[in-house]
Length: 527
Image 1 (cartoon, rainbow, N blue to C red):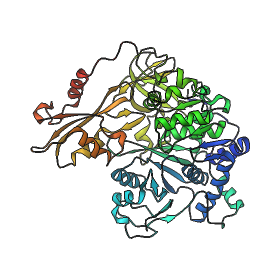
Image 2 (spheres, one colour):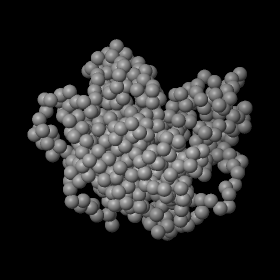
Image 3 (cartoon, rainbow, N blue to C red):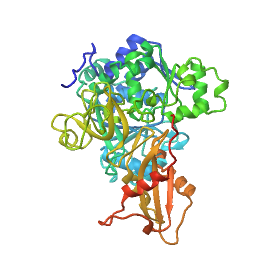
């Protein structure tokens, strides 16, 4: 039977969350950065004032607003302001390169780009102009063939490009919208309204837009799960957040904090030494981040000299909690996904065999299927019938076994790579490399890795007379695509005859991957 939708005792919209949080938690820190902090009351006041400016500028329900920045207080206020008036927000990764920006602007039908003028010292204007050259020389309303719905760009910071208008989430300029009008606008935002599209690599090389409603986000983060309660500590927790706000882990923690009064400590860029300093100074109670980031903190030369007693799990526990208590040593608990809003709250789960809808017994391998109020509304631009089966189940493509109603991750039935919590489309990376004049073939897939979950691996065949060192290839790729998509393992093949080929003329990636797996060292017996 489907799960009952919980009654939280308040209307589950994100606007309702920030108003309620300001009343309950007031001057308590909501988001803390090394240089500044934002209380719940301040977040409500700032997002309310900025929401008025957005309304005055013509924003409203259904406006498709991309937000481009790294961790920042401006990001938080802009996101809250946009969702509380009904905009459909589309957080963009601050690691995107120009080709990725062009793709998501188009796929998302973005009408407004909202964000910072510089990210980690790099100008955003140059990145956008490289992505959509037609924007140069224009003024709003924009008309750009490569991003046909884009009409305006609002950027905070200095040195703005001519095609962007200035904005400041902490210093709104418009006083034309009354409190009465804003209140009525917010009342018309319902739990059923769509709040956010989170982009993740698509199996067909285009990014998938995971669509969540207000009700889905609020209910899945409002229900306290047994897994999260030790971190929430009844609202007394201070969490160092290593999940970017633009990924679903950030959405999950922002929603959880708004409803439980948790304080989120963040860094503009995650760096192990700075992360340890933040934990020590702010007395963080836990670190929520990918295991490789936690391990980098533990390996830092100052780790042993720090007072980290406020976060005992950091000093005493393992880097990867997903491996703790696994019925099969070395097989991690499934770390959730964008489609379930970064948690398992409100999600029925089952493993099924190919061609069957019946749940498999515990410990038998099958495909993970999910449904429930915590599952996404669908994929942007995809019909429901393309996404869910007749009984409402989403077939994830993840290979798992179930044990005591928990899913344990074994890999993917599809080609999709899951590395460091992100989905990577092999075909997307292959298409990127195959456009290089030096490369004849690029074959990309994931292989198991102890800390990354799967490692993005590429087999490269250069054209006659061309060659690049692995380090050169990786450095060039990092300058043009997101770092998490860049292969961390590259095998250079001198001749295409060394690649196994199918009768159809396509490369036999299954056999090639098997060869590489044979060459991998065996994992240690006790992990």
